[in-house]
Length: 315
Image (tube, rainbow, N blue to C red; front, side, top):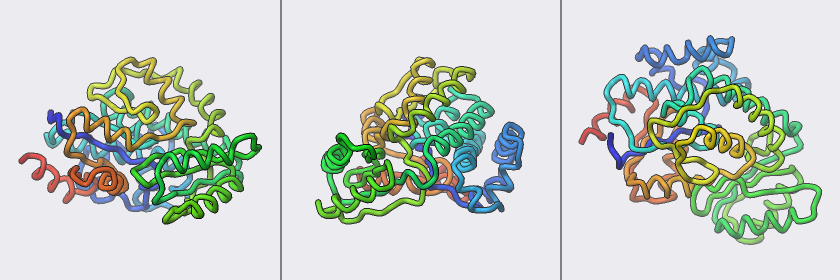
């Protein structure tokens, strides 16, 4: 184990058709993960991920199990090859479930079925077209939060700051009209960019509470163990060992802001100076550079990445 190494697991937005195709073809461990997930879900997840319809993959109920499977597949390949064990982990939104699975707190079968249900609950909590999200660049967190609070105070339609991804990069979400109004106000306040995001629901807002209630019912029937590797949670940027507390944090997370900048700071306070993004894409590595340019990051997705990372981290 290396106490200076932390693994990060991506959330929605990192998916693409063709992801992990090379790893699945080369590593039996990756192929086995997708077979296990396909059996649990009742459809061919590998076919969807490697050669499926992009529109279907981008539906939340398919995106979430696909990304979790991708992260767990790479983790198992890394572990089977004797890859160095990290001192801590964290995942962005959905990625928290991937982290808990890789840390031994959730079985793969339970994790992949759980996140598919999570995706369904999140999508149906707010009808398509009613909610929206937008990325705000170039303003301090407190300016964005204050703007959202002011616009939502006493209003029927709300907008909230929901993802604190990096200094100067905050995602807002809520009712579509309120998000549009916030974009206009934040641009006037000096935002460098304010970009609507191509999502179909206002994730991590209070509007997701009905989804949290349904998720709690599903979680009641799932076994959770104490993680073998510490996992920093999105809700409070802290680690937890008690399974029942972890269960509650996973429920709260669905309607609470993702404190990603704070999560990275917590990993740093635990000794992490080197990070590995485990699974599809390089989104979290990009955020890491915005948080602290002194932090190193390797990417674990395709066979060449894995070999290069193994060499780099062995030094």
